[in-house]
Amino acid sequence: MTDGPAGGMPPDDGPRKPAARGSDLRSAHTYGKLDKDGFIHRSWMKNQGFPDRVFDGRPVIGICQTFSEFNPCHSHLRDIAEGVKRGVWEAGGLPLEFPTISLGETQMRPTAMLFRNLMAMDVEESIRGYAMDGVILLGNCDKNTPAMLMGAASVDLPAIHIASGPMLNGKYRGRDIGSGTDVWRFSEAVRAGEMTLADFMAAEGGMSRSPGTCMTMGTASTMACIVEAMGLSLPYNGTIPGVDARRKAMAHLAGIRIVELVKAGAKLSDFMTRAAFENGIRACAAIGGSTNAVIHLLAMAGRAGVKLDLDDWQRLGHDLPLLVDLMPSGRFLMEDFHYAGGMPALISEMGPALFDFGVTGVSGLSFAEIAAAARNDNPEVIRPLSNPLRERAGIAVLRGNLAPDGAIIKPSAATPELLTHRGRAVVFESIEDFKARIDDPRLDIDASCVMVLKGCGPRGYPGMPEVGNMPLPEKLLAQGVRDMVRVSDARMSGTAFGTVVLHVSPESHAGGPLALVRDGDVIRLDADAGVLDLEISDAELAARRAAWAPPPRDYDRGWYSLYVDTVMQANEGADLSFLRGRSGGVVTRESH
Image 1 (tube, rainbow, N blue to C red):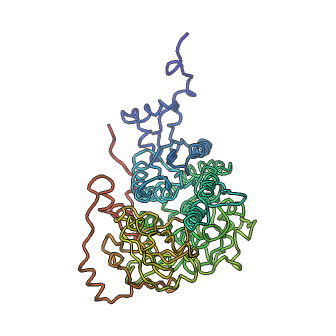
Image 2 (tube, one colour; image 1 turned 180 degrees about the vertical axis):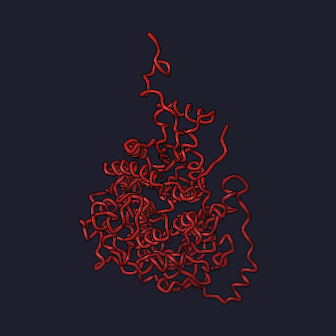
Image 3 (cartoon, helix red, strand yellow; image 1 turned 30 degrees about the vertical axis):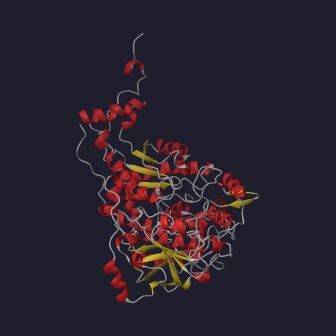
């Protein structure tokens, strides 16, 4: 018996030349070379069982994989990746999966936001360094979506985002409960003596019933819906539940579509336009989206070279109505939103007066076409313009001597009566100070006070954690108080609620006016007028500033040190200063 080609392997339909071969694809500069370098690149790839024919000049599609058992929102993404691969193979491409950092919002300490920019760097350099022609960005949990898009925008290859999809609705004693939103409610109920610890623990088992992200309109669902509204994903990417077979089918279609985009030469920058960002801001208002969308879109725009600032959020989004009745601003959950018609139905209800129907996204369809094919199957969940859940519900931008570079508040999640308020400041110098004193019966605080938290901005914490929705004092909870005005340089979970002023810029650690607030100062909030003021004289403010000393430096090595030295403020997106803009995808030097 004689061996066939390759030591007993059947012939691969006869001899084939590698890709070069005339291909002008980016991958051809790696897999199409007829020299030592080409030999190295192809030969080592063949140890995975690839035949020579896959290096014939077909598009190579990277699948940026964020699966991790430390990230429960992404625990099903290996299966979703298989759907992508089927589509890529069907369209004549070569799918290759590669890992990146996975940011598990509920698991990482001190905060996943500290590592968003690190993940963006990892994604950027992986896309640039590997020989891919287009990329599928697979993942969703809060910071993962903006991080992947930031990295991809810096290289600017064809790209499509596929979200993890939300979990199934939480269940507890015959009713739906929502991720995060009901955690905050139940926790305060326990502290107020209205819920037993045993009942609290019983609810824990029914909240997260399947793989996927928070099924409230938290940051993960907000970013997935915004990305869909920007045209950076296929329709329904924002809402199909993570375990619904239609998500894997959509992944299959995305695999086909990314190959088509590569062949058409359509880069991410062709879709990540100013008009796309404007649609994203409008959509955020209509869905009652997370305040974290502000900081993420600002960072994404900085990578894409699109001018975007806080004033755009105020101008484009603040006056828009809330149309989706979904926690934390409403009653329903993401499953209900999807079954009602998802983002296409919402965009149809918004109409061309509130949404730019002329934008065409990665699907190849204009939003006019997507809206025309949509149907609203539950007007209770997706409200028509004539019956909004709330008027003028978009995120409000605040300015004043307490936030000269801006701060934000989410009116749809706030107590309307508190959106105009004057109160005495009760100041906590750090998160540790807050935790030590908040439930002390001797704390001088009442329901009219304004709770102020310092040291939780990008540099101060570091990483800007989601602690802005400070729990209320137990003694006030016992009196029936359920909301107070709270002000900080921190962020807040998209699942949370309350009259919470966030992202105060500059942050206290950088010497912003927030650092100068003292107990007893009067703070004035007027969300409708966009005002956040500390009612002291300019002379007093200047005297306090002159006496202020910057906090000592706590981090001298590694990522923490690089981050603290180079992170920008919240009003600029909190990216690293040296990462703004694009570096492109050209790498001319070889590795051997």
